[in-house]
Image (cartoon, rainbow, N blue to C red):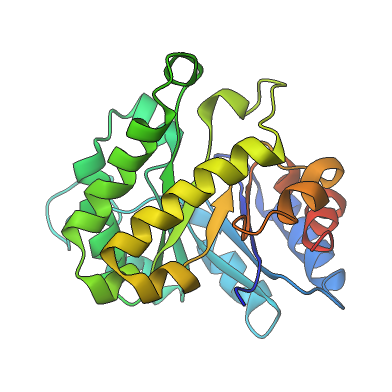
Length: 248
């Protein structure tokens, strides 16, 4: 059985004081949790997370990574740097990176490979826009995004990733995918994993990232192929984040 995983994506939010209160609140509320939990934070706060979360039930990670190992790439952060902060996870291919920074699926695949090479777990994000869903393009869009990653990785590496389905049209818009709509996409993604590595299809966790909240988490997480959540706004409040964690 796949253990549920709830990952908070702070996006570009936080301050040292606010972070301290948030992290301490989450740690204090983890007793009895049946899900694994992690937070992916802006790079300047990785040291703070390592200091506060080491030895707790909450893991931490980064929100992006460079494809380059090191060198003259001003402003970039390579995987080996993230590994020095004991990051367990690194988000790659988030919809905001794809939209605002024009990241291609091929670049996302290279980032996933770079994360794996330094012993961390990439959270590979895929998802369609509202226009793509209305045009009936959900399946080719998300399968193309995941396919670029699966095509670059060796079969055994496929077992080492996490996938996150984030319908762009359901993020911060007030619109929500029903559990059945999300489950349908998750099933397709798992079949795609199975075609590349049948064993990995049974173990790789596929998270839902379309505005999961305490109010809808239990229903979404009850679906057999929804293995957790990639949480945005609700991860910035300890009570909301814990509400999702304990919905498992």
